[in-house]
Length: 156
Image 1 (tube, rainbow, N blue to C red):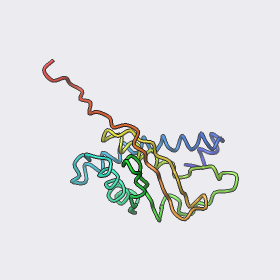
Image 2: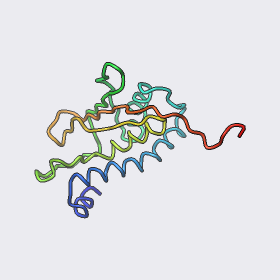
Image 3: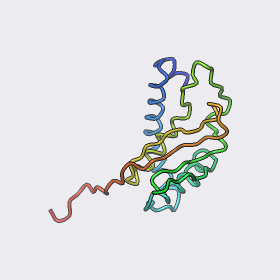
């Protein structure tokens, strides 16, 4: 899939955006599946949501767990750190594609997971083994807590 995107689009930054959008679209279904197959109720805060994504979501869909850490002082940003990443098994990036965020699907999935519990976030790769780092690390920043919107008005 990534190779086909690179062939069709040819611009690495645009491929990164497309992968993120694909992850976002896939993530909607994954969140629904996670909620239907587990006894998890809706997460009530950012920290609880981070733990559910790291310990339950990653385990359920990737077969790995991530650790949550690097919280900033005001609790508005954290990192998801993974030692393993099954999405990159047998992948080597040629030098011409070093700017490619091969696993950018995950940024979209995490972003939509938090959006579905009313948290607008920015998700970016901080460390990537394919880029020569020791681990995989996603940084998640809470941009805005969204209010619950209901499709019907009460009494009007």
